[in-house]
Image (cartoon, rainbow, N blue to C red):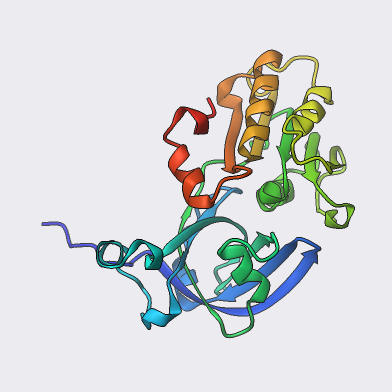
Length: 276
């Protein structure tokens, strides 16, 4: 007989050690906890965790029984779950870093991160993930906005020194340019877009290249395109036109302009939320 799985068994109860403002809109939270010694090494550079935010007035101690809380609490007091890329993890030191894009005083996770202080508690479950750059690929293409930057930065750091390619990073403010470690033959393009309604902005950059002469041969190219949903859809259209094989593409919407996180997640199951 299988051993019943303890509620919250995959939850890591962490303590904030420090925070660091990397740019005007990007804050890094460094946290630690003994359970990170067992944090799964899944090999993905887009490794992510689910962050769990529970109303402090409830006086609950983690790990949380999420199913019981969702069944017993009114909708406006149920736990809030948000997904974030792990920027870096050090299992030996029991440390983890997550970069948060801030949007003023709206949202849950970003507002928490902007105000986080040493000693604050953070509860995370995971990790998950699905992508890592193939070191044998001839040409790498990365495309995304600030929400995808942690995954792009992590991928660039793992590439071999002779890797070639391009990374297109869309930002709304020049102050968000961040120095990244990357191979000499991978170009990083910081693209300032001040018109948030222009969802084809990043796709135009991707279309403009640079690209290798052939993209459909095995190992010719690998693409990582993540970020705002409509922007990613526009990139997907470019990749179809170029004939990039689907198996060479990692593509996903992390968020959608004008949508709350909960509505965005619900729409993933609808035609509007699908990216083929």
